[in-house]
Length: 301
Ligand code: FAD
Ligand code: EPU
Image (cartoon, rainbow, N blue to C red; front, top):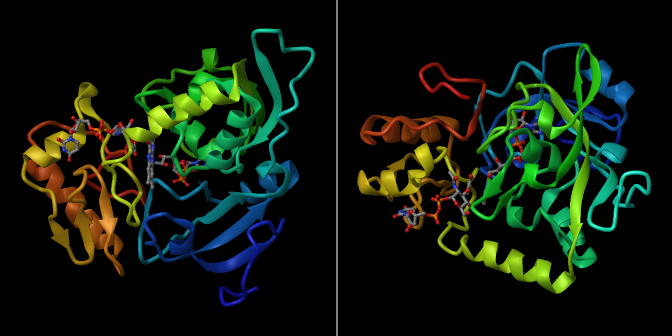
């Protein structure tokens, strides 16, 4: 199959030799790679037998225009489906433990379903355009909640095999699950609290309100983690960098921790802005974006 043939994202077991990754990222930047759409644990094991990267919703990625040498794995089929039926053996009147939710499930749709069911714990993650696996891997969140608020069990796949862990087994924290890079979160069981659809909706709307000042253009979200709880956006703003352009990328005038693609931006444009921020903000800040491939001088967590 070639990149010119349209590939339905739900197609399971498909391997595409050269697929432009820009269309799989919210920034809209990135060259080609071989992509394996994987829907079973057997396919996953085969895909992991050679150097690989695992792609989620592409909402935290800056992929090089030159593309990638490694194959890229994307979870589809049953690994992108959610069994929200409460497990009768594990659930109690105060706590719902769901069946398995695939790492490839889009998070926004899952959050809407949980709201309709009136199940609480994950509504603080509203508005994060991730897949469940990617959001769990970096413990995505907002000031009003994070992924680890609603996790019971995680299934993690590595080239050595599959294991199940609980949050207590991991050293997780702000924007960090403690799971090593390239260990794949294939499925999770959620831990939720019975509430009402109205109460969950109110909490979602409250959390979503904090996004009013965020830009609406193509972006991978916040570039840097907040150092010591201080807004990195505020620090970048105070350094006078709002609106700074490199090629067709810009530090958003609305919120300085967002880099936006004005149309036709390159990965080099984005790296130039990251370098400018690093050199002009006096406080050390850890990168939140994932750079593919990793760049010397811009160390990632
Ligand atoms: P990707 O971007 O595809 O990948 C990111 C990393 O996760 C990569 O290292 C990848 O290998 C790894 N990964 C992906 N899937 C898996 C898997 N199944 N198993 C193991 N590792 C995996 N983030 C926040 O935390 N809070 C916010 O409020 C927020 N707001 C955002 C708003 C906008 C408009 C945008 C574009 C982004 C925002 N983000 C936010 C950033 C982004 O959504 C999160 O970082 C999210 O967790 C990325 O998940 P993803 O599935 O898109 O992962
Ligand atoms: N601020 C400025 N200038 C800016 C940006 C922010 O002065 O350019 C000020 C704001 O006025 C406000 C304070 O900084 O007083 C905090 O700003 P904001 O409410 O936007 O929160 P943040 O700390 O900058 C964090 C997360 C976001 C998340 C929001 C809402 C990080 C790195 N960022 O932003 O997460 O959506 O809170 O909960 O933790 C992401 O991680 O990708 C992300 C978007």
